[in-house]
Length: 474
Ligand code: GLU
Image (cartoon, rainbow, N blue to C red; front, side):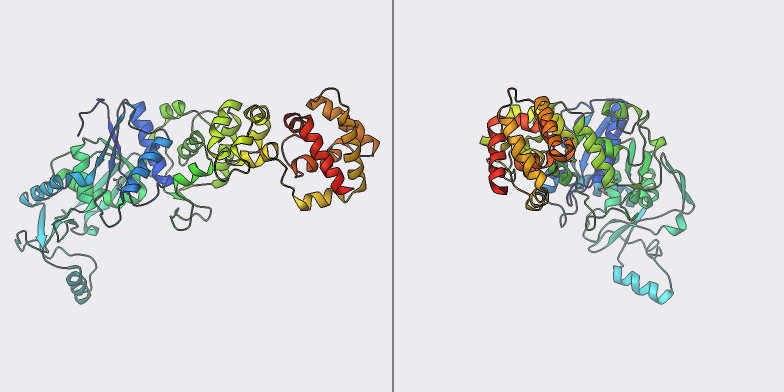
């Protein structure tokens, strides 16, 4: 282990690299990160990679990348790690031996099938401490079990308050498997002790493990850490977010064009409310204000609509230059509707304030503005047919093309004033008069403000498209 760089409390985030990075994990990480920062402490990243069958190295890199995307990473003085649980197997076994030597643990040669058979015969459930007093030594196939004492184990949890567990309901749980490998409960505690963790802030699903782990902490001669179990995330049906059913991978949101700042802000609000009038809050403020004592313990609804709204707000807050920089990966991807050589930065920047309000994700920008950078607009045939079914639309297109041809100044204001007059002459209000011009130039009936779009597209190209449309509807 590195020597600690801070002297404050030590938080940790201990994911298992078994798949994509879950949004719930991201929220837990952010809360730990906020606390480590605001309390002048440390955030330790420990990869719990002892389940060889399920772990894959790429998942570990995925975790590190995903954390970096939400602003958690090694270039920060409060960050320590990553450590890998698999490197500490010797310490886990040594701790198990210590527990055996002190009498807090004992070996048992009963297999799972033996336990089941005996329970069936005796009408019991769970392991009944059968080998407690048999004095078995270590041997092949023997598991090491913790000797759960009588009484009650009370967990002081910063989110949930005091939670009391009756030890009668906790069986003598396994510390080492029959092959000698340490179980999660033990490895997790031994690492937390070795890494001098003071605060364990983790998912609520681990609460049932906590009395057992607290017993291990004490039996190994340490004061348990401060515990906090944070509420689960649920979907619209109030079911726990699941990998199979729900979109839970942080990476997917990143790749779809959610902004990191929006995601961070949204995740922070899942079970906690930023101070101030709006839930939209800056990271430094949230980091300073976040307290576990203020976390709500009911499940938090992971609301995709709200996330989309947050993202839209964050997109609108960008300057045109920031917006362009943020959109680049999608503007120049293989899936972009136009080729990179046709892209014009100045046109994009000029239109940015009109594109931003039309984007839920950064990926949307290319589709909103594609007509500017395509040789020809992609025509929405249904919209076209509907628009030009009205004879006055055809007339307005013809008349506005003629009027625009002689327009001295090609700017949004003049374009608008001209169409207003042309429309009126044909009995159409401006709103209706725009449709034929818009369909001709952009291919669609919806999109960014027409006159700004015409200005950005330029006189020659706009008129060319209008003439093409005119010929087509003639
Ligand atoms: N590796 C465990 C998990 O991913 C973390 C346990 C903990 O935070 O203590 O669920």
